[in-house]
Image (cartoon, rainbow, N blue to C red; front, top):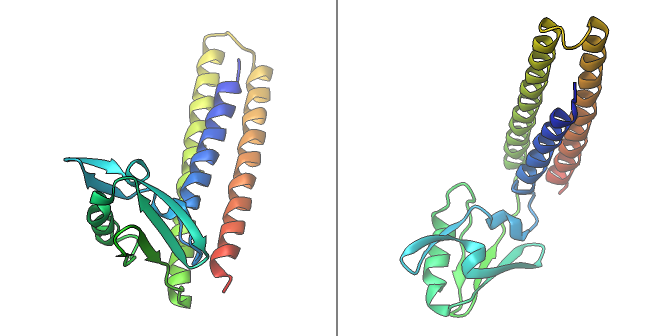
Length: 183
């Protein structure tokens, strides 16, 4: 039985986790912080990166430069209305400046808690993939397509894969937690 599809699924779970951790605020300005912002422009809802360029010229500020200056009020409103960000942008007629407030100790702990929830979600996803792989292997054994030894070898291979990917998740989480708690 080929286990490479499950290895790819494990890698996809880890990649998704890494992308999710990029969205977590660390007190430093980063353009990815505004990835979830949707702007009401040209009569439709559009992702911010399709109506403006986003940069972080300083560690405590994000600069949003709209492609069309008529959208500046809509961009500013969309950032302000996104309560999960908790940001208060200001515009000067050409650009939207988003100051990133310094994080309090309590807020840092809350962010670490949300990071730990994402770690647990990733681990659950890995376990679900492992369970799918085990079920597939047992079905093949019941159908006498593989032997008992093959089943044990496949289970060990999948166990090694999940341990490796769990270690990657843990390493990413430790790095992000250190980044969050650094003042």
